[in-house]
Amino acid sequence: MNYQSVFKARNRIGKGTFTQAYKYKGSVYIKSVDTAKECIALFCRGYRYLPAITRLEYLDDGSAVYSMPFYNKLTKHHKEAWKQYKILQHFFNHYNYDTEKILLNVDKLKVSTGLKNSLIRLIEMMANYNHYEYIKLELPRNNLGVTKSGRLILLDIIFDVELLRITRKS
Image 1 (cartoon, rainbow, N blue to C red):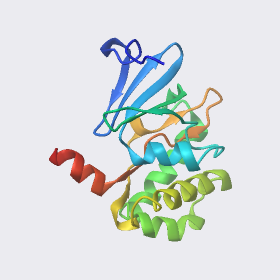
Image 2: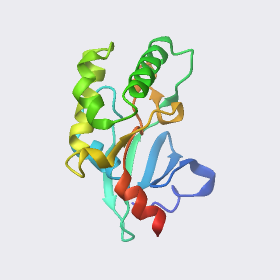
Image 3: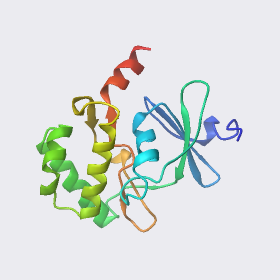
Image 4: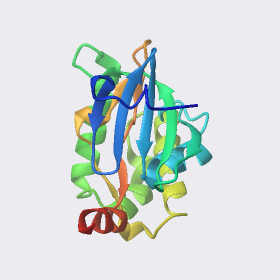
């Protein structure tokens, strides 16, 4: 597929250090060098609280193109998802966003087993790319989404600090 029509500024809905996201014909297309996107696409399919990401192809510039459904922004109107977000926020703060401590204590979280399992899977699969000390969690609301039915989606809550350092140097 030729992505030139997709990757136009008017279609862009988000931009981060590793990623640019574009909404095109009802889907989201992601151009990224992010190991977390690759991890989710390869190892986290079927986890209800993680985005349904599919890798489409690798590009010559070292990035990859992914697609996923468009998820709505999390707001207070999504009562159950908002409650889960607040619980996760408190939990992450309690452990100072230390990925290894969060993983070791995730059983203490007062959320559904499905959400716990999604979080565990994401952290453990990211550990295939780098050691826990280089994997960081973040929970800004704009990195979360909700499905049409209102289920919380952990869109972009984990990143590789080493990749961030390398990316910012270049």
